[in-house]
Image 1: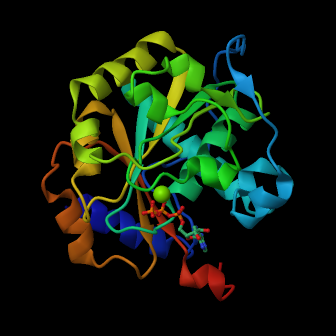
Image 2: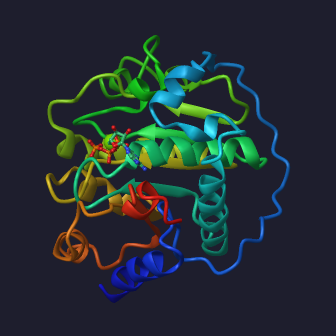
Image 3: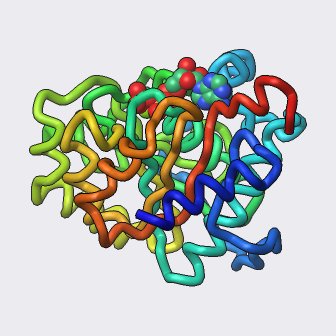
Length: 267
Ligand SMILES: Nc1ncnc2c1ncn2[C@@H]1O[C@H](COP(=O)(O)OP(=O)(O)OP(=O)(O)O)[C@@H](O)[C@H]1O
Ligand SMILES: [Mg+2]
């Protein structure tokens, strides 16, 4: 568990940055291949800038002064994922409310908008799905329909008006999330997503680790993990307990979110 402790100490030492990616050494932008993208079968929708701002989706607005933080996080994560050949990223936290969904959406937007990569954001918080809610998505098929066997994955995808970004939304809670997430159906779904969209980076917004087994059920299927810690909201033992059952996790970074230092202007 030393690496988590070290990462947190480092996050605090490096200028008390409120949202700090840990794990990379340089800020060098990746050179990436230009990928073709097209949304022949994907429905599109427009996002409401006011709603984005209210929900802290700062990466939507390139002029927002906070969006650079997510660009830095994106660069570090992509470099580490590329080095290891990883394409699927889980976002989770020890305790709930740390800011996972906000970070997941901002990161997905930053990758899609500022690189040539296509990014798919999947809402795998089947107990309390919020991605659609934060983005104001309400219409069309969703992951719920895919789980019901009433829709194919591609029918549930939505492009929120930004190039190279696709969302797989979940509109309502499922009744047995842990069973569903550990099921062969979910395994097949992840394999299908990876196989069908081979040029695509896939981000999974997961529930927190300590309250339920949901995240644990699906983490073994996902290449690597970004851990979100709400500043002051998770104790060291919370962090250690949340990861003790998963020694083989590939932690690609730790984000210290909601930093008091930022709130008090000590950046
Ligand atoms: N850096 C931040 N500063 C202040 N508030 C934040 C920050 N990041 C997120 N929040 C707020 O914290 C609340 C929880 O955020 P979010 O839903 O992203 O957390 P979560 O970890 O996904 O929660 P859950 O465990 O319920 O899925 C939201 O109201 C969000 O706007
Ligand atoms: Mg969430």
